[in-house]
Image 1: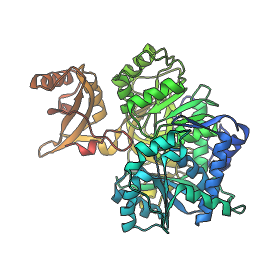
Image 2: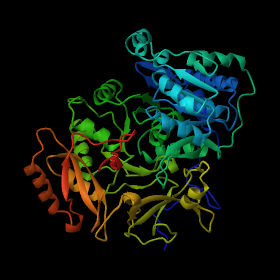
Image 3: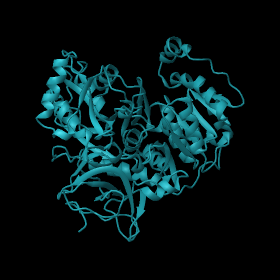
Image 4: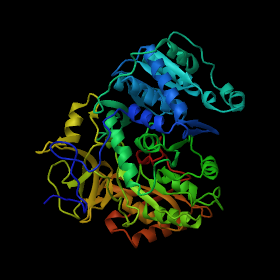
Length: 561
């Protein structure tokens, strides 16, 4: 029997029909249509500057012309190595306007990683900030580019701030030397004057629009091809699933543009719905709190480490958060204890909302499942987005499992990726087409579905620990550890063992007022014994000042040993 959630849907692919009506336009067409209707509204807010939809549309068009003048053509991929700055938005939609593809990567990536991204996506052009100029010169020694465009934060600041920023910050960066293969952003834009027509491409919305990078199911970084239709569908689904007025709202865009959550929800959903994205180029708790005070956003989204940092600092003491219509957590597992802690924080600050946990993968842009606003179940990541279909299968097979039985989470719907770039073997193992012509994404994640359609995430299959023949899920032990009064955050890993295959080791960061001692570690282990089976008990608790993080703020458990 097929696992059908309480509100079944009919898909938009194959011979079936969708509940929502999705835009068949390109991403840039959809956003420029919005800009035409909402010309005077603020699209982007950046370091005190407000950029209207009309101004943003003009900048997108100029950027499109400049890329076309530089030689970029439909189907070409351009590496965009930028934080959350306005130029990243202009590049995303400007490239889309001429039928080219934005390959979004983290600007803090190492030289070798950037070389790999360039080769993976076959990029001949790149855009980055001046502070990464020296790094890109090293990149170009290994993998030459036709043109590297260097943008500056000061180019997008208001009033006297550009002068002050250049004086205090940009002067510390290596001086950019324009050359045949290097251009400053302002000089790059001058090329737009050479293009008056023939640059706008009539784009098929089902073709590649954006490349994001992910580890994939083998752990090797791969370029994920996503279409305009994927992003436009996500925007409408998110607006529908929010259950609050998203149109013309404000979102604090702290999630980065090279991440599906940041690009798909914090940017494209806001631009698609006539909202405002308050750009946060670099996260720190104090500046984040200042932006909340100043802008009073309606929506905030982040990974669990962001919410943990906010809750344990005093920067928002006394701040009224009644402006919030939605708080969304994704990108990593939100522990039960942290959710309780942040829900209490929100209530204390006069917010009527609670944290709504979501789930998704970059292979379907980002969120495809979200906790409803009016019903939550402890430990659940919610119910599928409109027109997204989940089923739980016996890992590595098409065999669908009954309600309540654990297996691999598989997803179908309008946001599922086109595929990985030039990795046909992994495409074949990740994307399976059923007898009805519906493509299912096999996520590599373990989970359960109950009979009301609520999904429960258990663990990455690869992160599962096998000890003495038993399967152990680190997230379950981490939930227990986080409930100890002394523990701020935790991470559990498997360590090789000649007898058990793996044994369990726990790493913890302590709350303020607690210090490491043998007695405290014994107390933490005693706490675990009350809730954890003997075979799953950590053999050791190691106290750390902090836990290593990935570039998007997840705990980097692979770096622990």
